[in-house]
Structures are given as C-alpha cells and as structure tokens.
Length: 346
Image 1 (cartoon, rainbow, N blue to C red):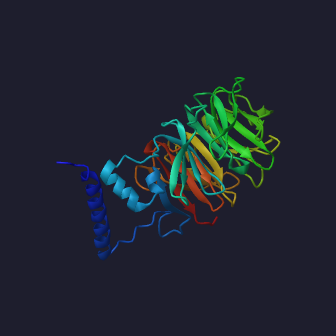
Image 2 (spheres, rainbow, N blue to C red):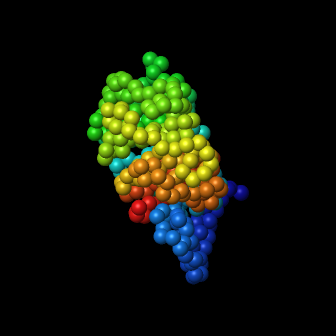
Image 3 (cartoon, helix red, strand yellow):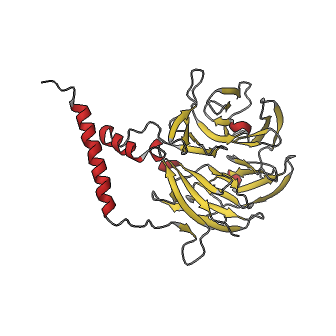
C-alpha cells in the first residue's frame, strides 16, 4: 500500500478540525478578559498590561500557528526567546530583543506578522548580546559582553562597523544613542565608565566617569538611556544603588536611590528609561518590578511583582518606552518581553 497521501490528508483533517472547533467556540459566550492595571481598583489606573512576546507565534497568523503546533509541536516556532536582556523599538514599530541565551537579536514585526533573527551572518556571530539601542535610520547597536564588542547593524542586518578591536572595552553592557548629537554611549561595567563615540562612524569621543561613590563616579554600572527631548543621560549605577543623571556635556546633574528593599530603594537596578512626560523608570531584577519616579527622583508607583503570570516578572533586565508610552520590559528568566501601556497622569 502506498502512503504518500497520508501526511497531507492528516494535515487537511486537522485543518478542518480547527475550523470546526473555532466555529463551535464562537457559539459559546466569550468571557471578557480581566484587565491587569496598576494601581489596582479603586485607585485610578495609570498602567495597563497589553501583551507578551515569547516567539514568532505571537506575531503570526493565529490559524497557521495553531495548525503548525498540531503538526510539529508547541515548541516549533522559528523564532523564540530564551534569555532576553535588551529591548528596543524602531520607527516602524519593529521590536528588537537582545537574547543572551540564543546569542542573537530577535526581531518581531507585528505589522508584517513575522519575526527573524538579526546577528547571525556570514561574517560574524554574536556570543553574548545584552545592550541594544536604535540609532538614526533605524540602525541597530548591540553590545556583546562576551566578545567585548559593540556592533552597528543596518536594519537589514548588515554590519556597518564593529568597535572593540582596539581593546576599548572590558564588559560592554548598556548602549544608548543621542540621535540629535550623533553620539553613541557605551556603558562598561568592569571599567566603571561610560565611553563616547560618534554614532555615524565610531570615532572615539572620550569617556565619562571612573570607579567610586562620588558624583559622576560609578560602581559596576549596567544600563543607560538618553532622553531625546532634553539630551540628558541617565545611567543605572547598579552597585552604588542609584541612578545618575548628566547633561549632554557630561556634567553631573543629580542622583537618586539608595540600597535597600523598601519602596524607592534599589537592589539590582538594570534598565532605565524616560517616558514622554518625563517620568523615570528603573527596572530592578531583585524586586521583579519597575519603579516609576518623577523628575526629582521621588517614587510615584511600582509595577509588577515576582511570578510567571501577566504583569509578573522573574529577574527583568532591559526596558524601552516608545513615543506612545508603551513600556517594553525584557522579562529575562520568564523568556519573554512584556508590553505595558502608560495611561497618563501624574
């Protein structure tokens, strides 16, 4: 007996089953999902959970995903996250995730309903990507802490230049770009400083800081953010348990934070970002949340807690806020990125 027809027939049968199941489920009353907001009722909500990205399944067609899972299994997605650290979004809404576990950058395009990997090319392979930033023209900057390199990619994945061949870095972790000034900032945790380069061509422009506990000094800094409106530079000074803020010229402006496990304190601060209203967000991997501060460093609210459900985190790392005040958090040990909407308000 010939069996050449068997697999196609099974696939057709499964597809029919999915169609019938979908039609049948439509007859049942659909439960309205419970909104996850912060702070919880009866307080006025300031943040709302939107969605989670784990794999290409989360941006692909629902029917094709369900069919593939039935045929090939639930772990058959072409693009998956394993140990995400950095996250950033370009002008077209494409979400980039530096995945240390898979040693690459995953790209999710919700509009095109597809995902792919950036950073595995014929000329190079990433080894330990952590920091991630988007530059002019949607160029992509990736800090690879294992290779002690910073890569600049085109949106199509071409390498435009590589920094680090002259031993500029020891452990590059965070990257940020001042688009108006054409400046690339690279945080080096082991060197306890921020290095500056011309973003367009990689020309060195000096550095900021040294090891210490005083103003403008660092102790194992990790992450960085440039406020594109003001040019202010915010550095997560992790082992000094604070965030330091500098102007475009590198002058120290202020710092806030202290060691501890209470509200407004810091234990293992990672990602730092600023929304369009000037609020400062600080991710803490120990607290499994992000805290929101006003411009003066006063705590306003914290979002999240430990766990695996929506709005819960397990050792979160990087953070990005887009122009619509959508907050993207790399939920590292949960192998996902969670998206939360800032609803506005003081």
